[in-house]
Each structure stands twice: as structure tokens, then as C-alpha cells.
Amino acid sequence: MRAVWFEDGIVKLIDQRKLPLHFEIFEASTPEDVAFAIKEMVVRGAPAIGITAAYGMAQGWLQRRNMDEVFEILKNTRPTAHDLFYALNFMREGISRGGDAVKLAEEYAESIIEKCRKIGENGEKLIKDGYRILTHCNAGALAVGDWGTATAPIRMAYRNGKKIFVWVDETRPRLQGARLTAWEMQQEGIEHAIIADNAAGYFMRKGGVDMVIVGADRIASNGDVANKIGTYEKAVVAHENGIPFYVAAPISTFDFSLSSGDDIPIEERSEDEVLFCRECRIAPHGSRARNPAFDVTPAKYITGIITEIGVFKPSEVEKLKKL
Ligand code: MRU
Image (cartoon, rainbow, N blue to C red; front, side, top):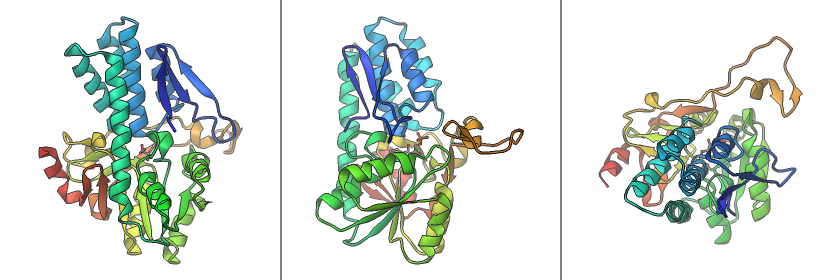
């Protein structure tokens, strides 16, 4: 499955705001439309945001737009996902070397998807037959294409005949778990149950979780990981209960320019995402809300980071910079 693709100069996206009840395709005809799609979360998930931005650059190039302007429009969309900046820089460098931007964007998309397949191979070895795995948010095919990141080892284990079960955190406020990860698990036929975010600790303490795998939006040089809000809590509770906590991400998510997670910019989204559930207001009129979209999990809570080139301890991230 591809969350985003490029056809006849149009960036086409599965509209993730509508899933799972409606399957609709959103068509972006200009880089401004592409920026809207990223900002409003028609597409979301760090690697998919990167791929979408790469196609946005290709579209701007085909339309003979000022590429510095297109770069800025796409850059000023979501601040946390490192893949966005990685993809934009990849495209800018390729175009400045005289490359064909459409070919470059396709090459970028294919390479990220292939990296996620390798994440699947590397992470699958960590999953034992009968494992019950907890995941947070959606780090699946909708967030990358085909394999996903956190879901790549899960899919691979399932396809290799291992019996597995997935706990899907609903992931308030945007419900990426309940809406998107559950949808993906259902499509693949993987046994799963959606739980309220608050229930994860309950099941961990009862011995119902063998391992946690989540995705990442940005990883700093010291191994701190920014991911969907609530990830930090899951990591602390997993640590408290002796449950291995893994992060799955391609190298495009690593930001080696940052020494620690404290330097990762955290997006704060509209309070309406908390005050409303879809169109329905759920809080008293006059109450205010805060809505940070991500948090940072300190490296000390992370057992390992599953990448396309192997599984590393957070303390080994620094050495990846040299590679
Ligand atoms: O706000 P979102 O839905 O873009 O947040 C997505 C996540 O936090 C994912 O876990 C992360 O981007 C990894 S996706 C492979």
C-alpha cells in the first residue's frame, strides 16, 4: 500500500483524516496544496511526510516554480518530523546537481520503502512466537508505504508464521491507533485489540505485554527519541515492568545535528483537537486545552533502535553519524 504517489503531475494521497470509515483520495495540484495536506494531516507519519514533500518539490519543479520558495512552503508545515527536512534537502541537492526532480522523488520514495522492509527483517528476529506487542500511534504503511516502521517487524513475524497479538493504543487526540493502525492490522489479518491510552500500564503490569515497538519522528545523537505524545509514558511504564521497549526508524529520522532530545522542536497543535472529538465538542464551553503532538523519550528507557542497517543501543547512535 502507498499512502502517497505522484501521477501526471498531481500528488495523490489517501486522505488519512477520513479513515477508517471513508476511503478517499486527496489530490494536490500545487505545492501549496501539498503543504496543506501535510499541515492538516491528510498525510502524516514522519517518513510519509518526507515522501510527500519530495513529490511536492518535484511538482514545483515541473511547474517551473521558484524552488527556494517551494522549499520554504513545504518546510514550514510540521516542525518535529526530521524526515521532512531530510527529504527536502535530498531534493534540493539533487536538483541543484541537474537531476530530474520526478525521478529523484520516486527514487527517494522507493528507497524509504525498501529501508522499512529491512527494518522488518532486522526487527523480526526480536519477536518470539506468541508475543503480545504494544504499539502507539500509527507507524504503519500509511506512515511510510508498504511495511511501515514499527509495524514492519510485526508484519514480517506474522508472514513468517509466528503467532502474534498487537495491543493498539488508541492515541488521543487524533486517534491514529484506533483509526489507522487497527485498520492496517485488520487488512493484514493480525489479531489485535484497541485499548484506551490509559490502559497500557494496566496490561503491562498484568503481564499481558511482551514487548513495545513504536516509531519515531526524530532521534537525537544521544539516542533520545521524539514520537507521538504519550510514548514517553509507555516507555517509563515498560521500564518499570521490565518490558523491552524498541523504536523502529530509518536513518532519515536521525538528526545528528542535535546532541539531545531537549533540542527537538515539539509541535503544538490546535486546542480544538482536544476539545472536540471529530465534529463533536466534548469539553465545557470556555475550557481551554493544550495539545503538544509529540514528547521525548529519554534514551535510558529505550532497549534498542531498529534501523535498516541493524539494531542499535541508543548509546550507539553517535557512532552511526560516522557511517
Ligand atoms: O502526528 P503524526 O500522526 O504525524 O505522528 C506520527 C508518529 O508519531 C509516528 O509514530 C512517527 O511519525 C513514525 S511513523 C513511521
